[in-house]
Amino acid sequence: MTKPVNLSTKIFLDSGDPQETKRALDTLGFLDGQTTNPTLVSKNPHITELKENGALTEETIWNEYRNVASEIHAVIPEGSISVEVYADDQTDYESMLEKGRELSRWFDGIFVKLPVTSVGLRVAETLVKEGVNINMTLCFSQEQAAAVHAATRGARRGQVYVSPFIGRLDDTGVRGLDLVENIVRMYGEWGSHVLVLGASIRNLEHLFGCFERKVDIVTVPIAMIEAWKAHGIENPLGEQDPSVLASIPFVDLKEKDFTAYDINHPLTDAGIGKFSSDWKNLFSK
Image 1 (tube, one colour):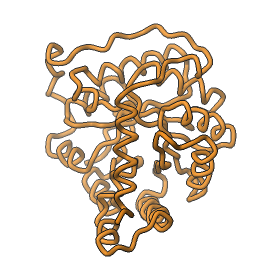
Image 2 (spheres, helix red, strand yellow; image 1 turned 30 degrees about the vertical axis):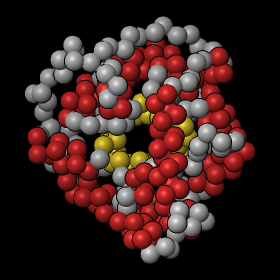
Image 3 (cartoon, helix red, strand yellow; image 1 turned 135 degrees about the vertical axis):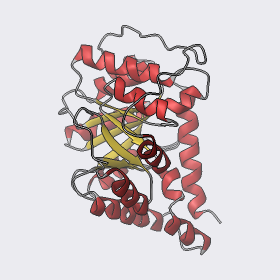
Image 4 (cartoon, helix red, strand yellow; image 1 turned 90 degrees about the vertical axis):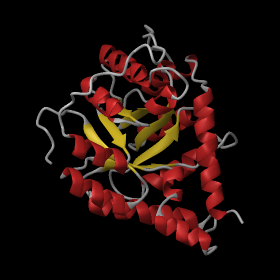
């Protein structure tokens, strides 16, 4: 399988396992990047073995994470690799900023993942001015995406991603693809520098739906890549019945300071809690 010439969307693997990076590359014949997070890293077989042997501490886990990211980078050296800061509801600006700077130095071209929270946006504002690449994760609303654009204004195009989580919105009964469509439309109207990265891809309808909406990037688990290969590149699936999920209407937002947007969302809070718990479980006794 080779990348279709008419496919503008970049394909990332969503995984914390370099062996899956190799499988994805072998399966597709190409791979544009990879996203990682604490949950995915906790599922890495090597990391799991170290935990079972009691070899992980809060200090050593970061070295292991760096090793994992570096192995992925070695497989796709020209690819975009995202690594995530630790964040919970107690993480302050200085702590998140320090960790973001540290992660940004792991290797050239790395993207630092930050949550779309008030602290995460402040850190993003600082880091983009320092030339750091940013991936703003756990996005569940158009206002959050607007805040990402505003907080990172002045960044070069491609320096900043925003990651709306499609499947997790579907889980609540609303159509996650609508959010992606709304963000793509808003950013197009604004001439935004931020790239849209479709995340939480659960099925081929999500994948092909992102393609049809000209999403800049999608990140998918290895099982979805293999399902895409088995299905074929064409999309005869059509869209899911719109009556199944509630629609998310487009909001005509205006550009303003990022602090003026309502960025609160319960799914962002829940996602931070899940990532934090998975991270702490790696070195808990």
